[in-house]
Length: 167
Image (cartoon, rainbow, N blue to C red; front, side, top):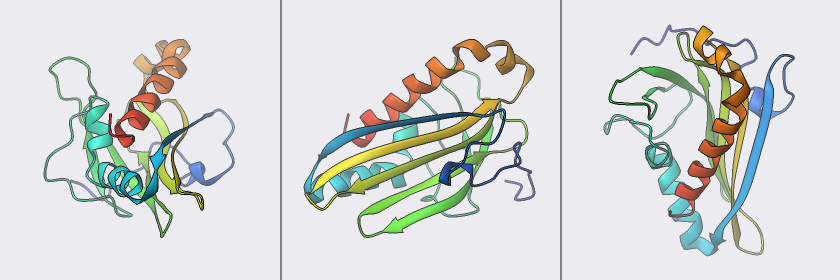
């Protein structure tokens, strides 16, 4: 891995608030369950990259838990080829009742932007998953497919939330 690989978008941390001009904001929330077991299960799925695997991405089995600065290769679920879409974790959420992280796309990634994944346990014990994306097409071929990208992104977000719920 090359720690010097640049981000392919200028607004690192954009999922914390404020959508830059030219980018699309998407957010999806789902109730995952209730109680400590539901919270711990969702956090475990999040921290071992099984959320991405459930959505069809190939992630190296030796990839450590998300931490700021970690680069991860996510191979999209498109045929047998391995594309090598690289992302870097830009921040981690590590609070007693909120856990998660965000990663941003690096040079060469077909999408430009950031995704955040947060699991929240509310005072009543309800556990929710939140997925936030700030993105736009990053390569010529994704710009050609721009009209369908929001649908594909929403479908993928649903797969992520399904994984967090134990699906």
